[in-house]
Length: 526
Image (cartoon, rainbow, N blue to C red; front, side):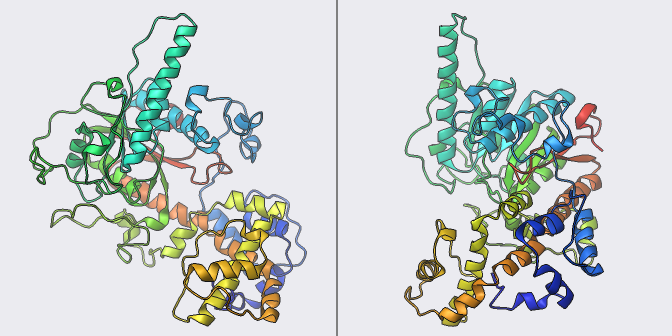
């Protein structure tokens, strides 16, 4: 964004400027970003420092290619379009039709792959109950429950998503019943997931978390959830499975940095869940599909502390929303609807481990964590296709310059996405962008200056690609810190690149079982 306003190109070593400035888009992908590229043909001799920078970034990042399914090769696994979508780009041929309704291809791929992994962890831990945190519209929850026969409790902060999940549960049950009638098959009793509306408070104890899961409440019954009261009461409660552990619907990272309303007593007053007597609870496996920000860190802490959690499969996302000691309230962090009790220790999302915390220079800036959320594979595809979408990088950097000319104090203003920006002339893009930050839309633009900056479009893309090269390194550091945290607490873990990164960029799953739990097969901790 500051490419022109802060002359970022001139900050590169002069020899880097010479060799990088002559690259084509496809060469940027092949020579800089693609770690799997075996034969590289350089248009000129690259300086050793640049080669070392690229090699170091590639070597420090965890391999992102998913393990091939069946007898497929790793090359097949790296294919842009997963095999399950080759015949129909919107319908996975490996997922039952009842689980594809309302579900986008990316999510179909994720719930199928993660569901099988969770099922395997349940078998290893001899545990049939699953708690899905940040369950969204319930796509994963339904697959685990109806498709894999598990008893699932989902918890989701957004009331609207909880209501939607319950409605989708009812639609699936109706479809199953119609199919049974058509096939003249006797009706079979199905155990539906249960849905809990609420935030998971990162500062609350595991006992409070367990009590929250035990709450049997309609989404509109708890006014403390930040998304506000739901207009329609959940239907289909007659399908809810009995048992102390309820199961909401999984599938969305709307928990953000996860905080939960404290339970209230029957008089509506604030109850202290930590001091409340804790009834016995069955053991369960904890999962979170793209649990946002601090939520994934909170789940790991509950896994370590709670005796009822036998295993965990954690998929993280939104690293820029992780709290740190330097930035305890990053942009986008949603504050808890109820102030936490005083005296609770501060628990940040990074670093989690004492070892990383003791390293000099371990801090990660917001910009570094935000960069770790970008999709390297998708960007390489755009580069190789010569996508016109790449033009928007240059447009935004140019706009930043004109914004600062008009208001020097306004930096990195939130423009939000301008639809089909790459199809607009820059003058039109600037008109729309200036208006969004409260500046005169018809402000005069120096035409000569505009044309001069447009000529540097490739350089803008090159500079962004250099920062993108570090994105997998930052993600690896965050995830490695969490693995070390588990190790410090006596738990071995494994990081699995489960999803196809071309379809699901945040494709790592952190898998761990409590010590003493039988391990075997692909999910063995190591």
